[in-house]
Image (cartoon, rainbow, N blue to C red):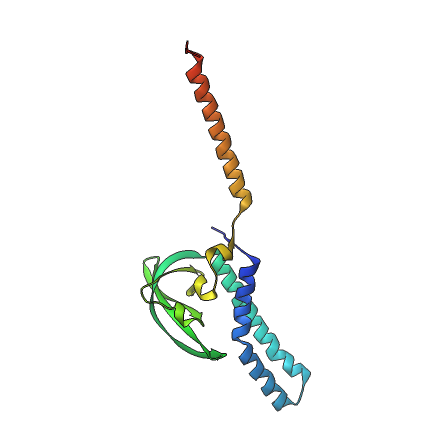
Amino acid sequence: MKRILTKNAKRKIRQGFFLSTFSFLAIVIIVAIKLFSFSAILLLIPLLIIRMVLVKRYKRDCYILENGITKEAYLSKYGKTGTSINDKYQYAASFQITHNATEITVIDKTFYKEKLQDDYKYTLYYSPKYPKKCIILEFRDLTAEEAFSSDQGSANSSLKAENKQRFFSNSKSKKDSNSGSPFL
């Protein structure tokens, strides 16, 4: 089932990638300026590599959310990754799920420690194409209603077809019940 991400959800996912790698990008630029004394071509190479990695991760997460399989899972373990931004540490959360009769561990990362609860059942999205990576909307500060746009066209057409069928079945039953009745 293909889901469609809203613009707001895409923006939040994109912001998460660029904010979490901002410190790394700043260090790379400072080191390049100090070592290579303002060489413009050498500054562009690490920037292009970082940009390619970020775009690849962003597209992978969008693919997982749009085409991924939904599973319910409990948190098996979590720990700090070593990344911190504005005194907030990043945590890697691990979940055990079964796929094709094999148990795999999928990992998602978050900056919200308060959202890591052992007894809470998380809804995670994962793709068999990327079996070690999953996405949990609560870790991205999103809800399912915010993240996915409903396909109004198909919903309206199915409602119209259902109403049309109901109308024809009701009219046939009225004709059948009234056709031979002496009481009208």
